[in-house]
Image 1 (tube, rainbow, N blue to C red):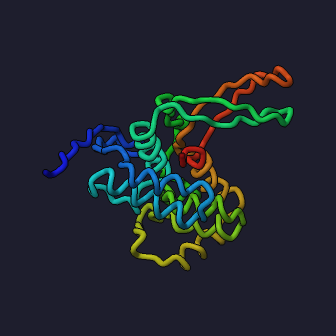
Image 2: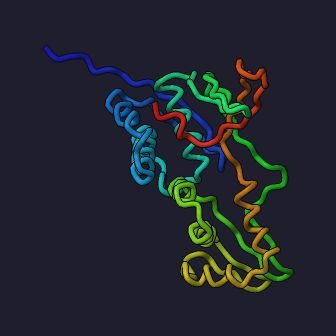
Length: 231
């Protein structure tokens, strides 16, 4: 006799970047086993597996390679909550150096948005740029290779359009090299406007409060990223 086919529940969430509602299913056991190998994996492997898991668990209906970094993180944490459990054990580093074992609830993960944030930046009186959000792969690449050349390269790739009062240059109208040259001609003040876009763009955070038994300090921290949740 054949074994029964098990139904998998589906859930719904709203993408932070554009408020689009999407459906997803939890990880299966075979997918969870893959996830458990990522704690010590290389960055390229983490990116590959996370994107593949999100793609299959959202039924292949998303353009995963084009999703923003914070969309990927938000989907992943929702998947993790529904698949493995909403409560996660983490370690909080106290100011005294003590490591505090703590638990957080993934239901309290939130999207932090800066008031007045925009992806359209006026650099000069007659020159503006439209930026796109960096992808998960680009952000992981920056975190893995913290150097000015890598950051500059990602910033350049995130220029979606350059325009003035009379001209508009879409991304498919200029090369990466031309975007690099454009950025290199900006003044420090103008480039800081572009940097601010990355510093203030939406991010997925978890507010954590933990008391240290060693020194008695009440630690209040914001936890970002998904590297703590590969279990």
